[in-house]
Amino acid sequence: MNLMEFFETILISFNMGKMVSEPEKVTGGLTHRMYKINTDKGNYIIKLLNPNIMSRATAMNNYNQADYIEELLKQNNVPAIYSLIYNKKKIQELDGQYLYIYHWYEGKSLKSNEIKEVNCNKMGEALANIHNIDLKNDEFMKNEIHVDFNKYIESAKRVNSPIYDLLQDKVDVLNESMNYGNKAIKCMPKVLSICHNDMDSKNVLWIKDDYKIIDLECLGYSNPYLELFELALCWSGYEECNIHYDLFNSFFNSYFRNTTLDTDIDWETVYYSNFGRLEWLEFNIRRALMIECCTKEEQDLGINEVKETIEHIVYYAKIKDEILNNINQYKSKNIKNIKNR
Image 1 (spheres, rainbow, N blue to C red):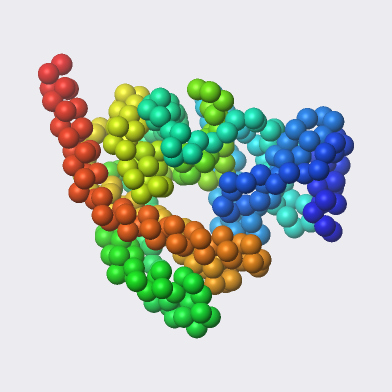
Image 2 (cartoon, rainbow, N blue to C red; image 1 turned 60 degrees about the horizontal axis):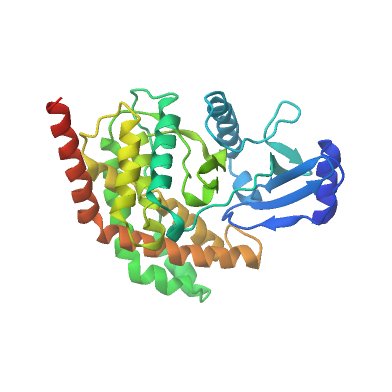
């Protein structure tokens, strides 16, 4: 069955109306494929989930958990684009292809040079509101990350892959990040909350100052400090390897104005624990080497993401002192203000 026939099957199966224009591929997704479909009943987004990810043993449990948590966000009026429910389910399966369906929303994601303090203020508050839904004192359990980069370097050399030089040149930085991260993750503050786990700028759509959060299928329970740290970086220029501390501080300040969490923690532990990008790197190494993908398009995407992710890891190591100094200055001011009340 070709893609057009598959879309017709989807429309019939879920009573979505008749197609009135050609499906339009929506750019921006790095893992799954998304298409805008206009019908005589409305405009929709159909997200086709990556088959390689869905073949993992843990995939369905993770998606089912995310679907359950998504309803909690909806009940708490978090501004988001929620997947539609058919046959009492959010995630759908047709002919072996898993998918989600959404109503189309006209908003646009912000590029790095478009992000202002007002956006960081709103995102800091939004993140705190999500975390506050089910904030609890509980141990943060995360498996250590063990990636055999030397094995991938050998594989890349064997097939003359362009990622060989990238990995070979930076393997020491990658291993250092992994080793420090595996130690730090065991020492994180004992607190858990609902986390979006991917709420960077590409996953928030704006119409002027109003926004909707998208891509909720990564929802789960994690450490709120870790997500705060990662997102304050992402919204302040980390993706461009150029942190703007006015944006970082706006995000950070807004978050702590809307939460009961304490700022007086060991932020160096949080810094080192923020090493999940290594898992993203390994996923894209496997795509680049055609271990976990089956198309040239996805392989090229993997190669590009390997390059960008390594650049981010190197930059992250370089800014350690300045980012921690910035946070510790904020922490000192906050503690002083509390004492003076």
